[in-house]
Image (cartoon, rainbow, N blue to C red; front, side, top):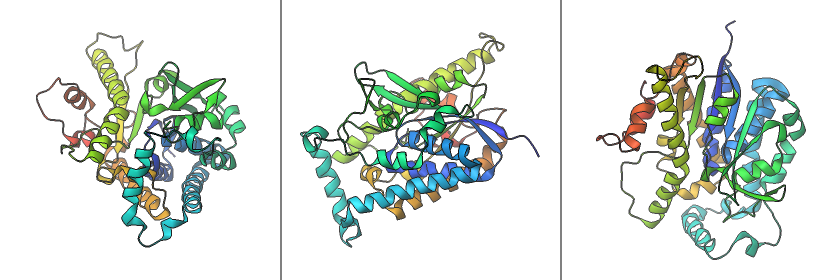
Length: 352
């Protein structure tokens, strides 16, 4: 049997849209020909990272797949308990209005105004499923859980040997919705503000040259948003993609310098970049669905993720360990105003 191909994973955040990443991981684990050396995750990506890693430690690929399913369907069950009105036949009609009303309320009321205690339902779900002590003891899979340090606005990337439930919750903490997790007396927010997800720390800490990015927030949109909700959603996408675009530009330039002989190939390693993106599956979904944890919806996203992963494996699986599988050079040049061409979403699936 051939040796598994080593791969680092970079998992974006996106709320309930992280169920798309669940599907991607489920399909990659099912394939059985890949070995995840390290996983960098932000927000929902951090949840997927920790659940996958602990499942692999417990019982290999099958156990990791089962853990992911248990986590996401557990989220659906918890959402139903917290909001029994979701089963009302007319709820789908009023849900967008309830979402807009709740978002408007966050501009005048903080989580501390609404509740004197921290009632994040994710805490108990993670504690019930994850043996954090086992994750801290192991050295098989490197983890990078990304958070934003509130005091400085800088990146704090938590590693597997120090990981606690508070660090995972901090990575997914939108401060308008949840009270700020405190770690060693310091506050931390969603890592998406500064790294969604962080790639370079993972590259430096491993000998694996291939990084697969699971992209949830569309980088390119062809239509100009005109409705207020669409404008705010696009602003959020741009904000949560900014750090990723910056890292892609850095990696592209380093690879170029190595190819040109201006950086020593003996002292510097090229990074092979791969991407599975949810533009088709997620691009048309309203922002409100990032907070939708209905079982049927999550399963639909899982299936879309599996389809995207299957397509990527068929088209690009043989490139792992050899070269990149999407045209990051052209994408970066267009996104950074170095090209006269309009950005083309198809670049994310084209050969490098």
